[in-house]
Length: 97
Image: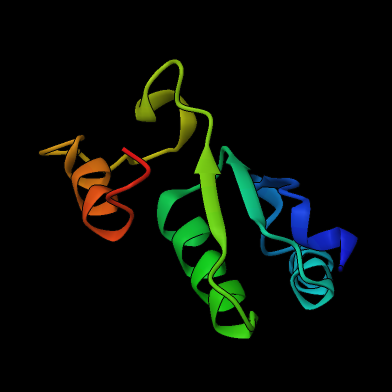
């Protein structure tokens, strides 16, 4: 088993462009995903999309939103239905919920 497959390291959104090769190397090693902290929303979105494209498996992407998306990212997206992702996951893994 690949030990990287159980890791979800921190991704500093403010540095995603400057440190992209570092994050890409982690993806190539097989990390499970990233926890995103800060950064410009569109820049982070674009960087994560490129990391997803380079990965041989879907990446888990999480973010610390305890103070809300406005604190996490500049120009936050308005979430119209925050429970929508959970509802979608219920359909994918009905035994889990």
